[in-house]
Picture 1 (cartoon, rainbow, N blue to C red):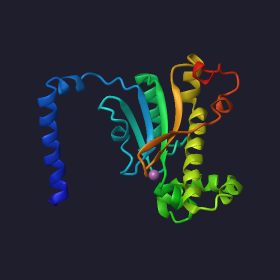
Picture 2: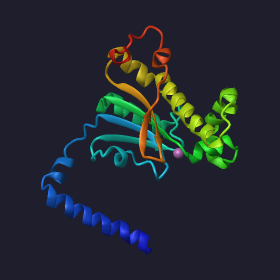
Picture 3: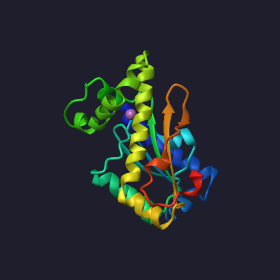
Length: 213
Ligand code: CO
């Protein structure tokens, strides 16, 4: 076994002992049924553990992660997570969180992604074409990619509104949950809340949720 691997197991033991020492009820409480207030849809990137950035404990975030935080309307894995989070767990917030310096976004932009990953990030290629003018007006490549990461999050939030899962839930109760789009800036660890036209993405005839007033 490698040293890095052994360290994982050792760190786990030390963590479990410390938790029990400082809070004897910790593991009793964790075994209770989960009631997480948040669904986190994020990038698989190893630098993106949202619980670290938000100091959330186990039980707070229900998580779906994939390369470049895609809300794919044909991904049965993602749709199952969304359905369970909305219909069973009844989360109060759905968060799509991208990040700057995203390898998936960069690969899509530079046409470098190969094989299955190339397929997977193809929707971001579409965004590059759609926002051609806006992106080309940003001279600095780093800033241009940052903007593309933001546009990607906005597109994925728009996709959320297209799912029948979200539409049915909003039909029944416009305020069952709030939807948020974030990017995380890896250079300072801060979350940026993105403004986006939620109202435009609500299906016609649906009541506007109070949180959008
Ligand atoms: Co990424």
